[in-house]
Every structure is written in C-alpha cells, then in structure tokens.
Length: 225
Image (cartoon, rainbow, N blue to C red; front, top):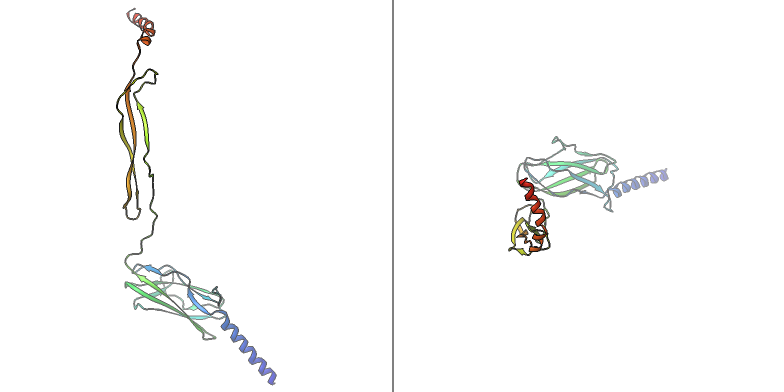
C-alpha cells in the first residue's frame, strides 16, 4: 500500500515538473507600433516560448488579462469587437488589436495564467498614439550626372568642296537634377544636356560649274521649245 502511495506521489511530481518545464515565458513577437487615434492598430501577437526562445504549445488552457496604462485604451479583435480572453491548450500564439483615442505613449501588458498549474506569464510592449505616423524612409532617385553633348551639322552640304562653316550655336536639350523624393529638395546642381549646331553653306568650284554647263544648257533649251 505504501509503495502505491509513493508511486502516485512521484507521478504527480513528475507531471507537475513537466508542465512547468514546457513554456517558460510569454513575449510579444511583433514590433512596437505608432497608431493614429480612433484607429485600429496592426496585429499584436504574444507567444509562449520555451527556454530556447522558440514557440512552445500550451499543455493547458490559459486565461488572459489585458492592461494598458491608458484609461481609454481597448483590446479588441480584428473586427473591432470584444476579444476572447483565453489561450487554448495546444496553441502557442495569440493575436489581438488595440485602439485608443488619447495621444501618448503607453505600455500594454498581457498576462496568461494556467487554469491547472496557476502559473502566470506576462509580456509588455509600448505603443504610441499619435496624429501623425513616422514617415517612410525613401532612397533618393539619382539620374544622369554628366552632361550629354551632341553635334549636329545643319545645312552643311556633304560635298567634299565645302569650305565655309559659320560659328557654332549651343542649344539646351534637357535639364536633369538629383532630388529627394520625400522632401523634394535638390541634392545636386542641375545638369544640362546641350546640342552644338553648325550652320553653313557650300561653295562650288569653277571646274564643277563648267562640268555642269551642258546639262544646264539642255534644260534651258527644253524650256523655250
């Protein structure tokens, strides 16, 4: 009889120790958030973890309590309705949402208490209620950083006897600069692409004029006939 009692006591001790050795802490796995007043936060997830820092499913059902240092804060579901205050056996995560109409920085505390072992675990995280959310960091857009110069010979005869070219004229084509997308500030001076235009005329030699004389004469005769 005594052996049976001792065996029963040892089983209870071993069972109790195994329950306590599973989940050792409750933590927030989501990052702190900044939320606009009267607006639902993003998901806030708490997780049961073992000593190695990995998720550990509950071996019993836990009752949850939610506390905020703001008297106006509310813990709700994704639809904005009242949230269930239990974490079921066999689960490790619980997701909730938060809403507040008073600006400030507050501390959220979630406490889980086992129904059988009465063990309690708590996790805390700060949340900011502000009328403006932090700006999204954007990488400045960098465009061309060197001028582009094009040379266009306009009105110049391709004949090899061309000898006269007047002074070149520079015409702006386009202007580019480096600016910050978020602020619109100019990060570097504007850079102008230009085209250099040459205007000229051709000169025909006396020898070429003599070669072209028969053709011109024939054209003249056809006009008078």
